Length: 62
Length: 425
Image (cartoon, rainbow over all chains, first blue to last red; front, side):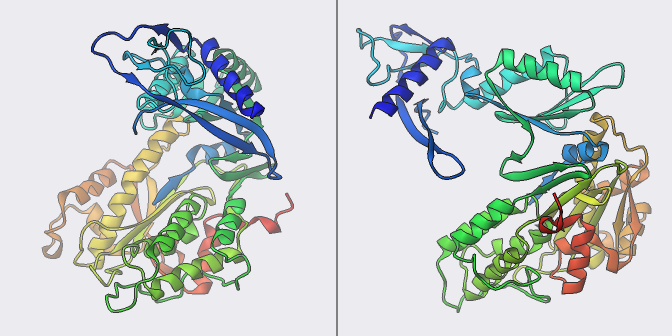
């Protein structure tokens, strides 16, 4: 689906522009945390789809 | 269960308008202290897939993300010379020498602000927009599921839409209406012999109704009563909860109006029933705090201990009421609305009042726990003053007893609850 790809691109861009992370090697003795995508459609008052939203979340195991 | 609307009430009394801002992707602003590494998201890997991302800022889903965000926004407010209220960590106030002030209330990424100076509004909004990505929602209309109407005569809050949604969810949108949520004299008991009904659905109903208490003190007692029997509900309990829904159908649009031009003066009402719960013989205490003619904070709760007399039950209720009272007074102080005189707390039990004023040990109250005598200190220091009131005017009764229809309607009006369908706006 094209809309979702667009939404994911936007999310990645917003993360990068926000200076959230940098690419490095995993130091010895550290664990990496998994991430996953959450997809949501936002509806407007009439119940029509207003926005496709993709959110990258860390699996905090909460 | 208890709620409070201190700030809204103060804003309404002063005739200030409340505005709302929303922070976009709030948690992404939080800065991490710990080293956290995450894998590269699928589909967006760079060439070297063994590399990982080191997080400099928080991502949604991290356990520390909410705290990281709060530290960030707290730091921002400190920088902008806001004063943080030490009794309510989400309340920030900025005052200047000319007596202008700006009050900001934060709820995770939603914030509402009010004050008496448009210039301060504008500069606050701009500085927020420069620091964080913001959506300006203008005047507050909908906050945490509560609908807000700001009209010329004050601020009206209700949960009309939410109420209709509940009724629809439990297929009660076409039920017959009733005028009160609970029949006088109703006692709900555990019934081991009766057949249990679907507890899941019952719990869902209770959960939905609980949130409605945010704007509906008139339901507090009945909802708390049905909520005590979630473990093994029977037909008796189901019909009690259905009655609440039928009551809601009649007055879905009701809410509280905070009137403009009232003096910001806090009064509390405390009361209790006596051994109302037949199963364990504990009493229910209730309190409500009013500013002007509208309720700003209320609670209805079963007492933690079994009391031996009505005096003791009332005394315990008054003690818990005054704890809330002190807190509200401190917040009001922070909002420049210091309560100089003692907060008057009407109570319909005269021996409780005497007990609070007179530090004498009476034979029948020797066993009352020290923590409840906390009230005496407050009375002595002139912070809380218990006063006698007539049982008919006892506002807290609506939170502790199933009342007669006439009394119920009377007290409901006194709490500042009105039906919005009668309002022009």
